[in-house]
Structures are given as C-alpha cells and as structure tokens.
Image (cartoon, rainbow, N blue to C red; front, side):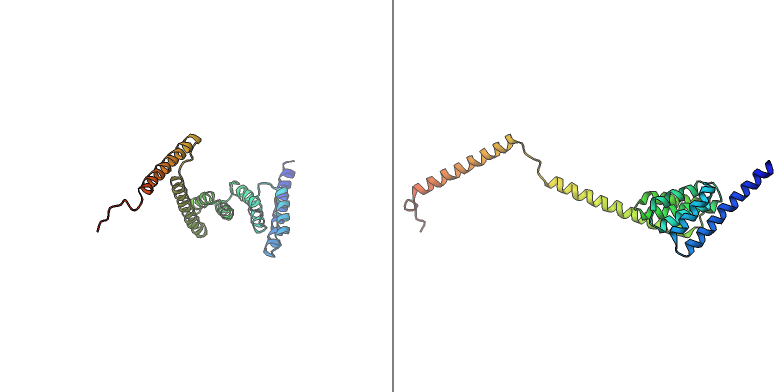
Length: 197
C-alpha cells in the first residue's frame, strides 16, 4: 500500500510537470490562452505547484488579467519553495502592482524580493522607479493640497441672511448720504462759488 501511495504521488507530480511544460511551450509561442489552460490543468493536479502558479501569473499578466496574475504570483511566493523562485514571484507581483498603479504595494513587493535575493538587478531598478513615482505622486498631491488651501483662503466664507441684509442696509445708507451731499452741492449752484483768481 505504501508503495502504491508513493507511486501515485510521483505520477501526479510528473503529470503536473507535463502540463507545466505544455504551458511553457504555448507561452514561448505567444499563445497565452493555451498556456493559461495548461497551467490551470497542472494546478488542478497540484494546487501548490510553485512554478505552475508563477507561470500562470505570467500568462495572465500577458493576457492583461492583472488581478489574476497578482493572485498566482502571491501563491507562488507563499509556496515556501526555492528561495530564488519566491524572490522571482515577489518581483513579478511588484511589476503587476506597478502596472495597476499601486505604487506603495509594489515598493513593498520589490523590497521583499530583494531581501531574499539581493542580486536581482531588475527588482532593484524597478524599486528605484517605484520610489521615484511615489515621490512624484506625493509632490503632486502636496501641490494640489496647497492649491486647494489657497482657494479656500481666497474664497470668503458664505454669509447668512442677516449679515447680507446688514451689508445691504449699510450700502443703502451710504448711497443716501452721497445723494444728500450731491444735492447740497447742486443746490448751492456754480454761481455761489468763490472765484479763486
């Protein structure tokens, strides 16, 4: 019975690996849909297969299914397998997150990848790009906040009805005084002015 169990486990692994190879062939040919199907078949046999999860993530990425790609890069990274494979999956997850505009999350993925494999130059370069992008976004957000603050400071606060009525009454009173002054000046007439020559 033990021999039968061991033999079955080996044949399952070989079968999953065959589907991974078929997926790799389709991927190299640019047939990403067939690659996705082959990797899914490998995962139906061995759901924790790190290479099948990583490669499925890559095929989904190429097919523009970024959330699906992220999910499978996560599964590959959490498989606990070969450290370099984990680092590659974290790097690929970072690229997927960057493509989705999730800069801060991509920075964390690149950092995790580099902690495992500090020699990964691509992860290092993408980390630098992501940090620059974050700095740029932070700067733009800061400028936007400053502009909004300036607008708020420049805009007078809204008035209530009583204050508007008070200002209107003050303007009417001022107009009334100006008319009275103009009336007194008009009543005296030009002939009553003293000549200054």
